[in-house]
Length: 219
Image (cartoon, helix red, strand yellow):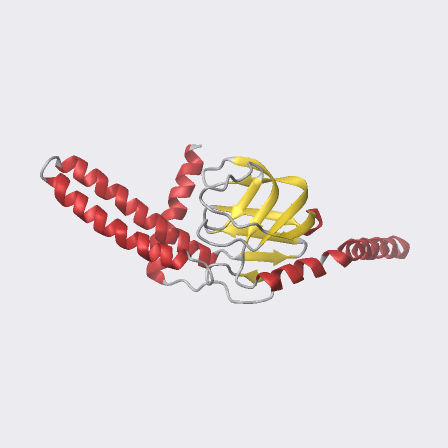
């Protein structure tokens, strides 16, 4: 547990400070990369929350300074961490998009969580229902977006998969709710791929067997 907290803390400061200051380039757009931050409310929320955090933190520090300087600095440190968290979430969302590679789909939500799915494990893709702050999210559903944003699609899985969250906790997932800037393109890519994947794998296995057979015959 302490190791996971330490790793989370490192990721927090890396994305919240290092990536932001060094202006690391985000992954280039290609057919395997599907970003989700550009059409999200994430940037607006980050700016507004950061401004409020700075103003509130400064005001609280000023007021508490007259009463107890130690508590004043503790509240300031808490506000600094909240500010870094906001920056880290937005920056990591830019640098950790959804990725389709081979028969795998890696669905991410910044540095907070990521879920690797086998395309063959997706039984159904349906339009997602709107989510509000009052919506009760089922325990086995992974929501890969901010609740200020509208979800696009939900993936219903054939078999549950483990999801590792920010502090290393793992839970079983049977459905995934997500959004992407080019959601239709991402869905089309996923739907096109499974039709031939079993046949493709069989052909690859057959090629390997033929190659091994030739090697044995040539000896």
